[in-house]
Image: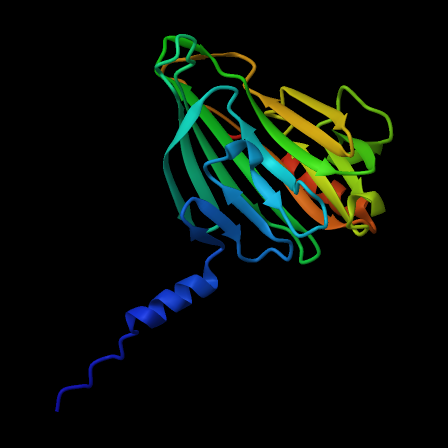
Length: 257
């Protein structure tokens, strides 16, 4: 007697299993972080907004790891794979001052403990011109009451109350004025990739800009860089944020070609 055929999962069951384990849930061009306790989502049609954190009693919501392309651009392709959301943007070539940039943004879930949620933006750029301006900025806007600047030396992050030109990360406290009272936000540029980190106040909001790719970009060259952001408890924030930023800083710089 022939052996019975193996049981096959129905398409509906397979689809349900995939949805249950997906890191990002896609609805058109909107990607939602399925495992985040904070409502966190990316609108791929609005790359400068990056990851928006809604539901915190703050309007407009905070945004992390937005990509400022500094020129008109269009979304030409995107996909979700594992813990990564990848989108490709191209600048409008019709403009007389077009940089002809092709920029890839990959928002990736970053390993962290259960008390924090961390994401990483890996940005890369290339051009079809012989030479082009490559400068981009990764922008985060957070309602915050306190700011600390972090410098990384000897494998550890040291926090300062005053701005430092050597800072590669900032820790933002979200006090009662921010509507949360219990969370802090870390934004960290990789020391091997960072070009310039600027922090400014805009009313109750703090705008953090990590500037990338200060050199001229040549045809055939790919530039790549990355920035980390994380949200965690305000209690002991310097410890968890320092540990995350130090581990991030110790990872080797990404290869460029």
